[in-house]
Image 1 (cartoon, one colour):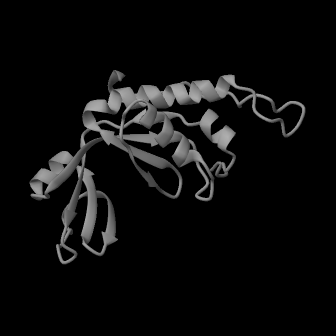
Image 2: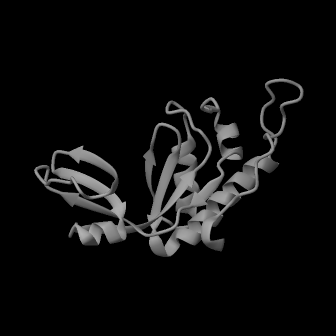
Length: 160
């Protein structure tokens, strides 16, 4: 497995954003709500209750109250949890395109949830962010390291 990347320039050059198939929702339920039997993507316990991210059909099956319908974009770069600036760069790029985002950092990747109707546009913004980073010269760590490393082609499911 690759080592996590902490350098912002290298992270931006290696974003590899992928739009996951499906519609995902944010919901909030009381802390006492039993979530067993519900396939959730993520939970977070807050004073007001448990925030849940789940696939829309699963949330409907469980009668979860939907707060936000989202497209889910995974940044396939293996980001270091202590990296500085990635969240800000992604939020700034999407904000400049008037696209809201909710970012979830996980152990290996960052996950961006955007309004479902803006998911394709958000993917294009993040791909452009990576392309722009790849074409800019970054400060050299050695005489040969003046450009981003080559990145694999971006794969998007369902022909998106």
